Image (cartoon, rainbow, N blue to C red; front, side, top):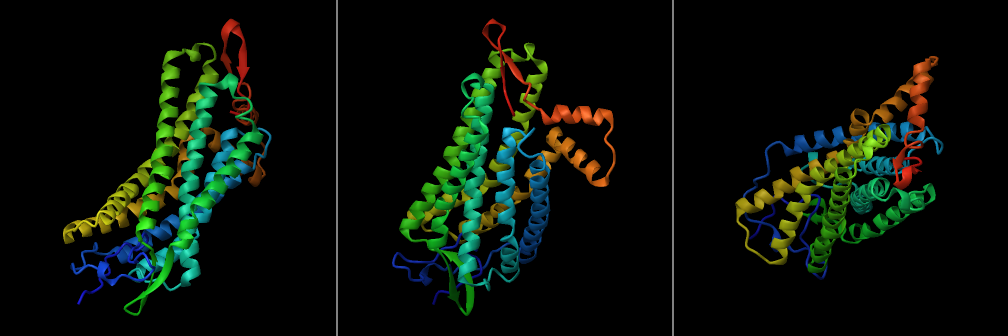
Length: 368
């Protein structure tokens, strides 16, 4: 008689047949090889991400949003939306932390199982789509500045954000449909339906919502680098070019953090789906490696939700300047003259940015 072990894909679960019945045959007879202390390590990491992600992203929304429409950068719209997506996501982590501390048993009902899984999916999709939009925005700002006035207008940016949210909400629907709570040996688990149709859909989603956007991001930044190397724009306006490079560095850092966080999970996910679709016989050692790899890579992916605030603070001097101004305002301290001057420079970052054009003409990059 086959027995169920605690070594299963606790978040990206399995164990359903095509007709929706629980398939006990998928449970392995292999001994439990789950990493020692995961019931302590995972809850600790999840609660750490929850607290740092909650306060960090709330802080980002407050700081970046405090400037209002006037004086803000176009990229700030994407930053606020990214922070909002991460803020919603971290509210689900206490549920998964408690579940992990109880050997992955789920005691919060079917509705929260589906909803929390849906929120995680929407967060992942919205993050990569917003980062792709930010990369395209940097491409337009550097390579196609003179031809992108409409595409980089505030109205168009807001419409893009709405489209990203609607797309992410739609693409996350399978998490609502294929996630459920099942009873196994008198314990409840929040698991995914691993029918053939869902496995194919999952594999398609990996390419649609990770591989394809990353290729677009690489194409944008590759073109930007070649453009900057080919045209000596810095000679025409060194200050404008410095601001542009600074913005590129910040956006690139956010993208690298996302890719590094989510790439291991997507690799393990594709391997597992491929093995399931091919009905391959997997040894106990390989199965253990996959399971533990998914657990650790899932933690790494979730860490991305609290990384961005640190990137803004350490790499974006404009963000730090805005924090300084807010602190002085809240403490009731009068601003010194040099602070006011730097504030004006910060407020209008990019509004006076110009690129040398043919015949000595310049093009203003408003709200860079």
